[in-house]
Length: 369
Ligand code: SF4
Ligand code: SF4
Image (cartoon, rainbow, N blue to C red; front, side):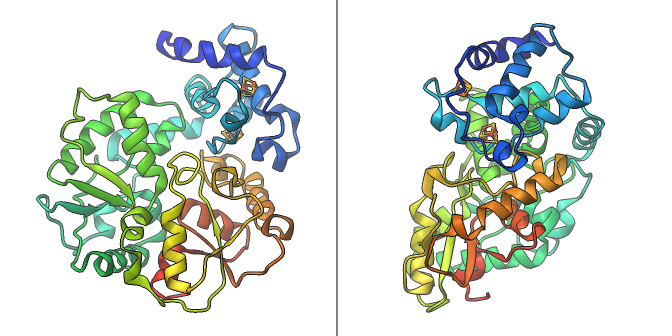
């Protein structure tokens, strides 16, 4: 085991191993899978046993348990120590390397994308300007999955909000992703290297706007923790989730979807981790003429929709069950909505994978439901 990883895991794993499971019921993965072996305490106790040489983390069972985390952060809210469970589980995944994580790392090393895609082709023909003060970064969820139609919508929303066109950041093979897909597999060296490359790409901008709250988290919280304020940090722009940039200009979207009744799902990396609660609600109120309906659990108490941490890849059915539980009538409350809306491409896609109707907040504020 690498000494750095062992040191990083020692405190969080030991805290959990000797804890009376205070966060037992917080984990939406454990609730969806209905398995005691994937509660935060069990997963972290496994890490403790692994790092003290009592069980091999490379066994299939251990790999499965370490992958059973979406990074939602709900357990941390229940923990008296604020123990960073998902960060520890992600780091421990590097000790349990699966064939999939090895392949992803290899492709990321070569192309800057875990699936070897070239994002530049998706944004081909769109304006780029390295000196523009504000620029748009699509991220893998948009460039790799949602595609050009969704990117064009984001850019139209930005144009309406700012009153002029916003260019796209340069993306190219080797520097095109925030690094989240390798971060969750514990490849910290690749993340750090990638953040330094992205600092070059973003160098001329003051603000970079991204539709993916996971990208914003990587470029702020993770960058501050890994790269720090010394190397490459001075030239890094402020990175804002798209809803924050649009929410500051919400009056530009007034009446776009008048009388549509929406229920808003707080994505974990935007809400619980990013503390962004008001901007999406302000936008939805402006567009529909009324405040969005809330889930029974909302804001920083919202249940995860199952789209993060690589969980839809490692456990397709578990991730779909999480989306179904989130959208169930018990979770939604009494007043019925026309549509569930969210501000995270991964959450929206996981609802869709489970056969549920969910729309991106940009669809609502452009009146394109
Ligand atoms: S995360 Fe906190 S509350 Fe949960 S098992 Fe670990 S130490 Fe206990
Ligand atoms: S971060 Fe979320 S999914 Fe991961 S162990 Fe904690 S509660 Fe479970």
